[in-house]
Picture 1 (cartoon, rainbow, N blue to C red):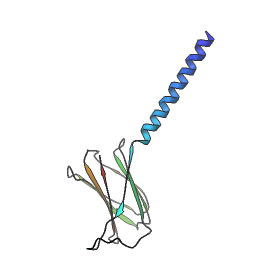
Picture 2: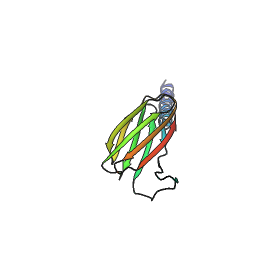
Picture 3: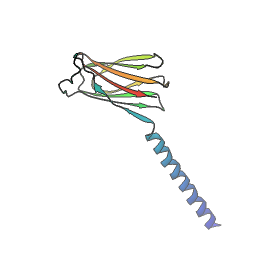
Picture 4: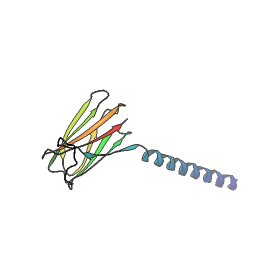
Length: 129
């Protein structure tokens, strides 16, 4: 009887461990990194002088939230996220340093995220849901 109980506890521990590993694997697959690039502002499309502004973003499809990570982007940044397939748009004015959490509809489509700094510089990224 003790042997059966030990085997049952071992089986239960194995199942719990496997479930936790699968959950962790699924959680890491739930976010989508969005590549953010400076938007050319001159007519030739030539790249601008490099700056120390750092903007990264990712989409969490469990919470339907875009996380924008901003560094050295000035005091305020206007973030606009548009679903080009449906036309839905959301805009937020956020601090130029820190993390902004922007909920979106989560609808499938081609999305564009645009960051406009107070000095007029623009950055953008695209992602598909």
